[in-house]
Image (cartoon, rainbow, N blue to C red; front, side, top):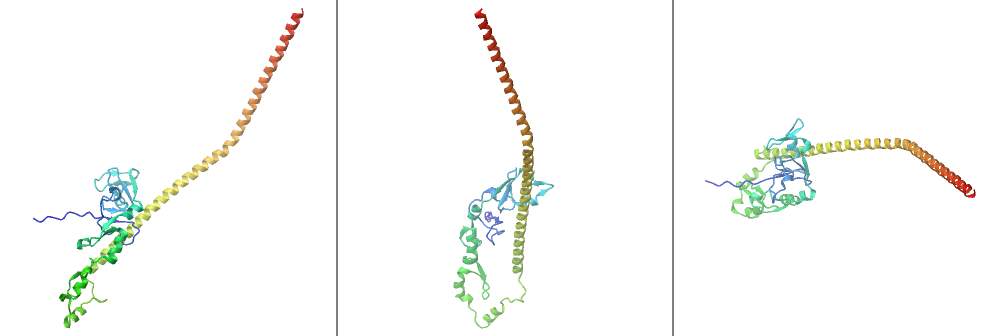
Amino acid sequence: MSLSKPEVSLHQLSEHAVVGVNWRPMRLVGEVPREHACDHCRVIPRETAMLPCEHVLCHLCRQANTSTGRLVCPIDKRSCDKEELRMMQLPETALNALKAHCWNEDKGCQFVGPVETLLRHYERDCGFRSIQCSISRERVLLKDLPVHCNGEECTATGEAAAASASSYPTRDATPSVSSITDTVEEQKRQLREIHSHVAVMQSQVEKLHEASAMRMRKAQELQRQQADRERQPKGGSLLRKFNNSLRRSFGKARKARESESVQQLAETVDSVGESSQI
């Protein structure tokens, strides 16, 4: 019985600034923090949401599993409200620090590097990309192309050379099934990327709308507070005038009592003096 190969965990990036890396399956180096990778589709977006059940979803999976205002987890089927989600942002530095294996790893390429460097390596430098030799009909790795071209199997003369030359595809030739499939897959990838950008823009518009509504409420509250302050000085001025008048009245009364006490004391002294003369 043959042993099956261990399953390789592949991820896809979305919303990455480097054009050409989004929505391409890649094998990342090391463990990706689970709060930044969608548990449903394995996409690593800029923003994820952790549900109360602790599963993590990207924006597209949340949108696809929301019905009547409630989100249903596609993994355990538990539902929750939008207010129960815990949103998490993937920092730009962490996104750029992600490293991945070359897409030609299955052909022997051992290159590992950051996403931006990986794309440049794959498109320009990787020797493990392959082409099909029109003479031998073999697929040859770029790194082996010089040896292949100088080998006996790639020597064509006379009729063989003419036959091989006539087999080159022309603009009017009918495209092969594989080329059509590749074109369709590329168009699908581009559509997914466009859909992702539209979803992100929709999310940003919703956030701007919420922020605008919040600013409007704050402005209305400030206007109300300003109106209250403008009404307060009038009533406060009358109260201060009343308090000042009351204090003056109390002061006059106190002085009057003091004057009466002094008068009574003087009369007492006079009466005592008269008594002593008698």
